[in-house]
Length: 173
Length: 117
Image 1 (tube, rainbow over the protein chains, first blue to last red):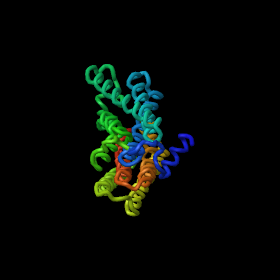
Image 2 (spheres, each protein chain N blue to C red; image 1 turned 180 degrees about the horizontal axis):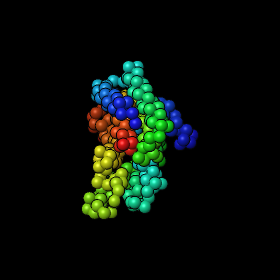
Image 3 (tube, each protein chain N blue to C red; image 1 turned 90 degrees about the vertical axis):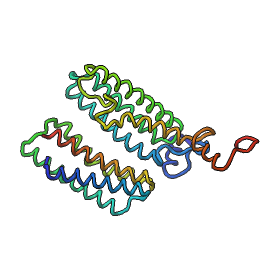
Image 4 (cartoon, rainbow over the protein chains, first blue to last red; image 1 turned 60 degrees about the vertical axis):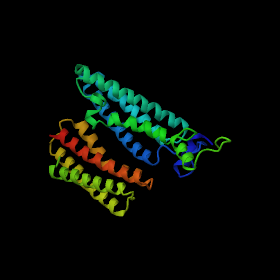
């Protein structure tokens, strides 16, 4: 079975393709809400950047290119979160991490030196134009990716083990 | 932009968002009543689109036509897409997705107003 069909099966309500216990699909539960918000940001940032690049690129090229980059990162995060494969999880984690670094870097630069960004980028002043969600989202994303992950040391598994009492002395499982 | 309809859309979208988030908080699922409510907001949005087309046909123009059209499209597709993603999972988070879509509509209407006047 290819990863693609495994993902489809999981979307249709089957079990997650990963064999690790306690793993949840990233697009279920709180993840479903996260996917929705990421999709909104993907569309908003990408289309806004495209309009700015098409109509007035010379005014603030750095800001507009950074917005376009932010848009691409949001698209990758959305795709990663909707996939239930391990690759999807890695993609989402990388995108969220890049987003966190980006919003903190651009946010700080835009506060320190306003002349760098004559026009607003998605990430300027930590996402002020977007209710500061750009700085909250990657943190939530990384939290959710960690929480929904299976395996021995994942929070979900730890909860399960603690709930049933300490693991047997012969070792877990 | 027909101001009366725009205000009506924004207000009803915010009411819908409040209602849906309340349901999500109570861990309830989206039922027929919510879908009907979302349908009513969507009808107002479509009326707004028709109003905008009539105004443009009469010769009025938005300050940033391209942005205006994109926001208009976004306001139309937000609720149907949100409802589709929301009912895909019968859970508290699934319900909240429709609330997010309703908030997006309210923001779109505010942005539309900015690009028009």
